[in-house]
Length: 171
Image (cartoon, rainbow, N blue to C red; front, side, top):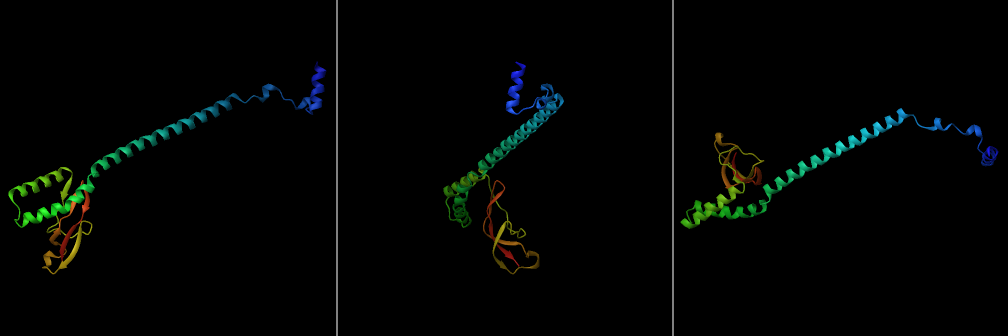
């Protein structure tokens, strides 16, 4: 039987010296343990990064939802501003009845509840980030670069400018 094994080896071209001891072919236990530790460490790192990314995603989407809720009514509020301007002009010139005045007051209150805030510009220093200068007029030295007249009020919605104030500036 042993002779048959040698004959098969000779036919296949494998020499008995080429065959290594099976114990020598087994990997070192410490080497396998180190490789496994490295794999576990890498997987743990990937898991922690994925967990951090997911946490950041949750925070970002939560923040986006809050922002969306704040400004969801912005289009409606912006489209109502000309109506509010017309009411303000009518009230200023005394051309409204008591009932119309109450409607104006109610409209202003509802818009304030939605976050609309009137921009105070009269007498303020001109700021191109807040005001749109339609014209400049000659004024005394102490009024230079100040808003002399507000032609159209500016408004904030939840601390965001939704309309710049159109003003006359002293030069």
